[in-house]
Image (tube, rainbow, N blue to C red; front, side, top):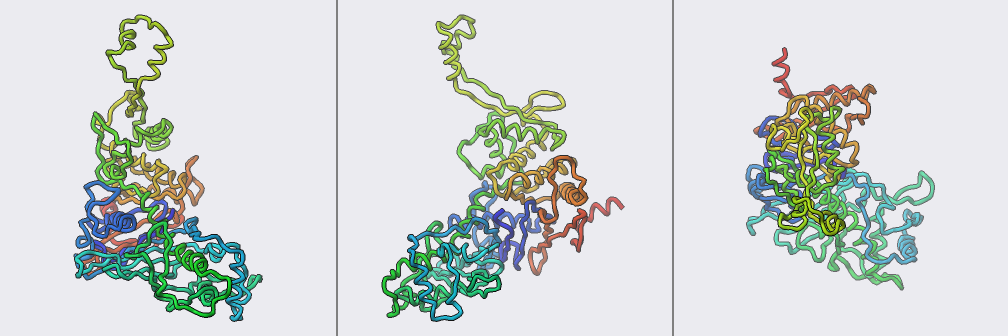
Length: 555
C-alpha cells in the first residue's frame, strides 16, 4: 500500500487540517452531509492536479457524471478564493525512489569527492558508496510526504499551483514554488541538513555522520566551474509550473551558479551537475510524486447507486474506469475476464462458507451461426456434409459469444440480473472490485446498500480476505453499517484469542482504520480516529452519538 494517509485543508467543508490514516481496511462513518464524501473527492482532485494539471476540475477521470467537483471556487472552503487548498499524502516509499541516471558514473568521481572535502576534517573520512548517484545508498528512508497547494490568482482569474513539496520521515526536504504567471519556478526551503541523509565518517558502528547534501555543496566548489549562489532558493530551467515533469530530470538554472577559478583539472562540470546535483534532487523530488500519481491512478470508485445491466447489455471493451462508478465496469470485467475469475466471483457469491448470497455465476458460451449458411442447412436437415472435416472446421470457426448469468442455488435455475432483488445487483460490483488484483485502492460508497444484516457482516470477511490475499490493496469504505464494523471487530478479537474460523486470515487492530466524521460551524469538518483494542472492543473515547440509536433501542 503506497498511500498511508491524507491530510486536507481548506477543501470543501474542511477548514482546518484533518488527517485520515489509510490501513488495508479504512472505514468512514458519520452523519449525512458531514463530509465523508469530501475525503473521496479529495483523492479525485489530487489525481486531476498531479495527472492533468487540472486545477479547476469539475468532471474527473475515474468517475462518471454523478461526480462533478464544480471547479476551484466551489472546492475551496467557504468559496473564499483568498484561501489556499492544501492536500498532502503520506507514502510508504519501498521501491519508489528509483534513481535518475543522467550519465555514466566516472570511476574517479569519488576521487574528486574526497579531493574536494579533504580541507574539512569532519568530512575527510567519508566511507565510499557503491553508487553515489543513488540516494538509497546513503539513507534508509521509510516514509515520504508529497504535498501541493492550489491558490487563486486574481490577476489571471484562475487557480494556479502555488507549491509542490516533498518530505521524508516526518521532516520537510524541499518545495518547488511557482509564480502565478509561471515565469519563475524554484526549489526553496531546501533542507540540505536533512537527518535522513547522513553519511558515516568511518567504519565503526559509532562513527559520526555528516549531512550528505552539505558535503555535496562543498564538492560543488571544487568539482565544477560553479558554486551555488544560494542553497535555499534554486531556480529551475524549463519549468512553468511547480509540478515536475514526470519522468524527466529537474535542472538547476545556470543563473544560480557563480563561476569559480577553483575548478580541478580534468573534471567536467556537466557530469557533476547532471549526476550529483540534478540527478539526486530529481530522485528525491520527482520520484515520490510519480509514485503517488501511479497509486491514485489505481484507485477505482464505486458510487452509492449501482446500475443493473439491461437485458441487451453492451459491454465496453476499452477500459473505462468511470464505469466503476455505476458498477457496469464490473460486468465488463466479467464478460472479458477469464473463466477462472468468473468462477472465483461465483464462489464468493454463492458459497455458504463465504457470502452465501444465494446466487453464484455461470458462464454461457454460444456459437453464432448464419441461418443462410450451408452449415445451418445441413444441421437442420440432418443431411451429411460432403466432408465431415469441413463441417467440424466450419463449427470451430464460428464466432463465439459469451454470457454471464446468475444461478439461483436454492431453486437450481439460471436467472438474469433484471429478474432478482436489487441487493444482488448492488453487491456484485463490490465483489468483482474486491477480487480484481489490478485495483490498488477500492473506494466504495455504501457497500452495504440493499443488503440484509447477515450479508453485511459477511461482506466484512470479503474485505479481510482480499486485503490479506492482495498485498498492498486498500479498501476505503464510506458506510453506515454497524453490522460491517461489528464483524471486523469480531475478527480482531478472534485473531487475538486464536479462535478464527478455519482458513480465515484474521485481522489485527493496525490493519483497520475507523474514522468518525462530523461537522462544526466554527471549524468545519472534523475527523476522529476511533481506537479498537486487541480484544476487538472499542477503547479510548468514541464520539457522542456514535451508534447511540442502537443503545436507545435496546435499553
